Image 1 (cartoon, rainbow, N blue to C red):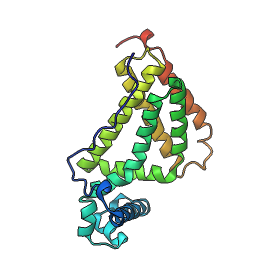
Image 2: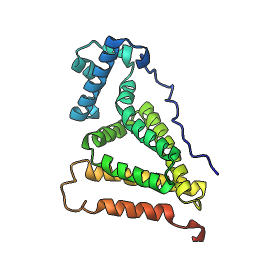
Image 3: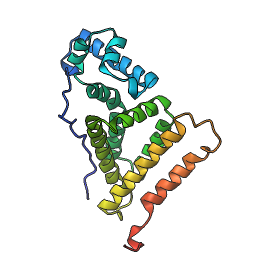
Image 4: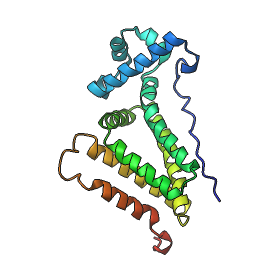
Length: 224
């Protein structure tokens, strides 16, 4: 039986990471955390077009050279902002894969988290800003691909545990569809549209769509 485990991939070494938080003294750690808070606020309030090292340094009340000691590049700041969000997903996925409960219960727990997170307007906004930067910035695109690849493969592993009839390729396709559905929910529910009438019932529709994707017996389908 396939071992139910997943590992976080190492961050891309293409961009310098800056000072390691674990080696910083108390004052340095406070400065680093303040920079991340300011950068997060700036990204939420001004969007990706206004997001720069100069703007972050100005907001934090420090020089650019001081900022670059902690975060040499804009991408390093972005990683510090986004890592807690994606790491939370990966940690939940790891717990689901290592859990003593049934794979189906683990999957249901992840689906409920996806529904809850879709309504988190701030995290959704940060994620869409990051995606907009990834569309034009190669390092952001690498970060995006790393995270999504790890997430997709981990979810595919869980789906094969839920439905052993799924082949590896089918489970990866199903995982990609589930992630796309969750991303779409975040756009519909976490971006100001949740007050309209038509999103009502999306939770139930989401669960039903997941069941159809995961539990469908593809061995009876015609190949083309």
